[in-house]
Image (cartoon, rainbow, N blue to C red; front, side, top):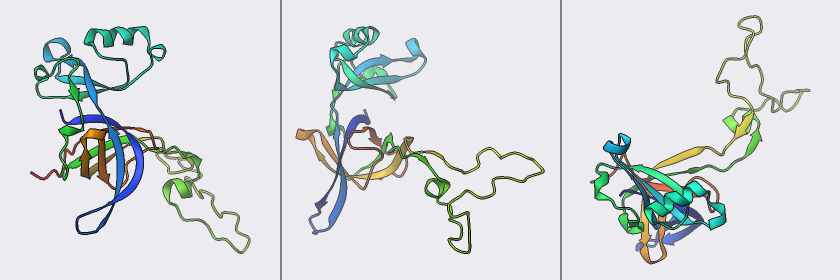
Length: 211
């Protein structure tokens, strides 16, 4: 297993042995449990479903309750499917913790970015503003959107005002600074997507991993 689920706690800093200040994000990760095993014979591919964070009974639907009972797993709030090479190596109710990770390795962390609501083109896309003097009425407007006579429409993909944030974002090759197994905590260098308390998917980096 090379993947685990967790929650963003916040940011702080720690000091290396050389006295260097390292900005880190604190992530409370796992433990996760195997709730379903998928094989080529039954589903056409190899995968393992993991569950994270205990959930109250009244917040779980009846079909999901049956799903957890079949796996002999406590009710979970989050479910995530992870592709594996050999699903037969896993068992239902098998538990994984932060100990599957090694300090110094690179991680890919996926989360939902902070929502910023509807924003203008300057904040959303980094466009320049218009002149601020001489009677200008185009200080922060988008400006020309398309040709007038032909094609008489706005091209698809035009960068304009609209909803900003709350998108799935993956930060690649982020360094794992420290693992604290007794507290189910990972310390990673730099920032990660999302609000405090937001769900994160943590896995070993696909690219740029040192041997």
